[in-house]
Length: 77
Image (cartoon, rainbow, N blue to C red; front, side, top):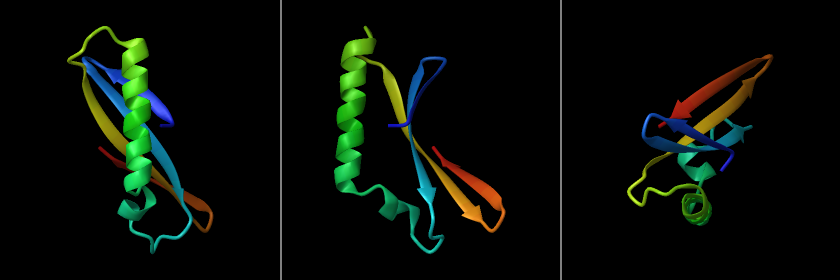
């Protein structure tokens, strides 16, 4: 998890990925083992940093891609 954000009553865990090959499907960048690790880290964070057992969380992905001299950001909620 690269970013943990808070918006109103929502906690947002964001994984940032730099995509070097635009032919790779974004779903392939965060496979099942990486997803398990992200969930584990989020649970640990919630245990240590929140008092609300019913905290509402969201997991987002920010894909950064460089094409020639420009950078493109795709944000997936």
